[in-house]
Amino acid sequence: MAAESPAKKARVEGNEVIDGEEYDKGLLSKAREFAADGQISMAEAKSLWKAVQADKVVTDTERRTLLYTLEKFKYTPKAETLMKEILATGKVPQYFKTIDKVHYDSGLLQKAQELISSSGDKTISLSDARKLWLEAQDGKGVTECEERTLKYTMEKNEYTEEAAQFMREKLGLKETAADAVRRLRTGMGSDAHVVCILGGTKFQGEDSEALVQAIASKLGAATGSKARFMTGGMPGVQETFAKNCGDGSRVWNLLPVGQSSGFGRGKDVNAGADLEERKAIFGLLGDVYVTVEGGPGVAQEAGAAHARGAAVVPLIRTGGASG
Image (cartoon, rainbow, N blue to C red; front, top):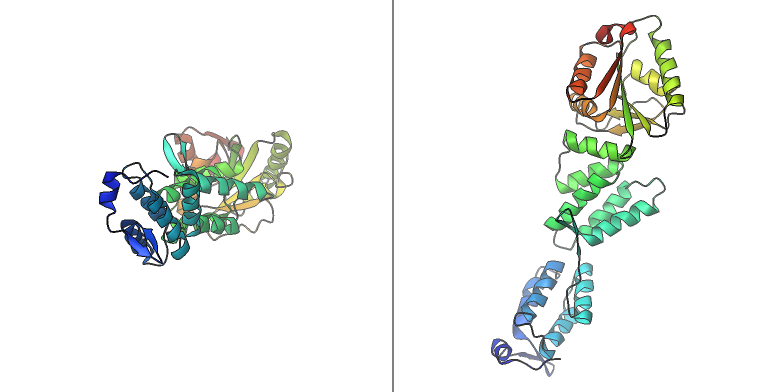
C-alpha cells in the first residue's frame, strides 16, 4: 500500500487506536453513523469508499479500517458484497446497465431474466415478483435506480396479473391505459396481430349466434400462429366466439381487475379498475375489430378504435351498431 501523503496525514491526524491497532478516526465515525440504524447500506458503503479516495491514495490504515467495519458493523448483504469486492479490486464494480441513455440496476435486470428463464411459461409470477422486490431492498428502502429498473421489467416482460398488481402496489403505481396496453401486448407477443371481438350481450338476430360460431371456427383455423383474439369477457357474442375459436389457446378475455369471465375457454387477463377503464384499454389494444350486432356501447368502442387508425369490420347483416 502507498505511504501516507502529507495531506492524508493531516486529514487523519489523531487516528483511533483499538486493541493496539490504528484506524482512521474519520472513517470509523462515518461507519458508526451509518450503522446507527442497524446496518450499512450499499449507498453508504460507496460513501465510505469515496471518502478514502478523496486524495486518490488509499493507505494501509484506511484499508485496515474498512476491513474492521466489515468485522464489527452489520452491512446489508449487497453492501457487504460490494465492500469486499472493492477491497479485493480497488475499485467500485459496475452495477448499472445503460439502455437508451438511461441507467438501470444490472443485478435486478439479471435477476428478472433468471426468473423468466426458469419459469415454464416465461412469465414473472407473484413469487418471482416478491423475489425481485426483496432483491431491490437494501435494508433502507428501494433506490430511484432500483425503482426505475423494476418499472422497466414490468414494461418489457410479462407479469402474471397477481405479480403485476403486487409490484404496482409496492411501487405506488396506478397503471395507465397505455401501460396496460403495453403489458398486454408484451404478453401476447410483440409481433402478435390482435383481433378484438365486439358485440351485444344477447343475440337479436335468428342466425347471429350460428354466424359467430362459424366465424370463430373459421378464423381460428385460417389465421396464423401470430393471431390473438381478444374478447371483453362478456356474455353473448364474445362468450360464443371464445368457446368456438379452436382450442382457445389464442383467445384472451380482458376484464376489470378482480373479475373473471367464467368462459372456461381462453386466458382471462385484467386491466382497468372498472368497466369504463376496461373499455378504454380494449379500444387501444387491437389491430382489427370485428363487430356483431351491439348497441351504443359497441358503437362507442368501435368508434374509438377507428379514430386511432385500427381496422373495424362490422358484420352489417347482423344489424344494430354493426348495421
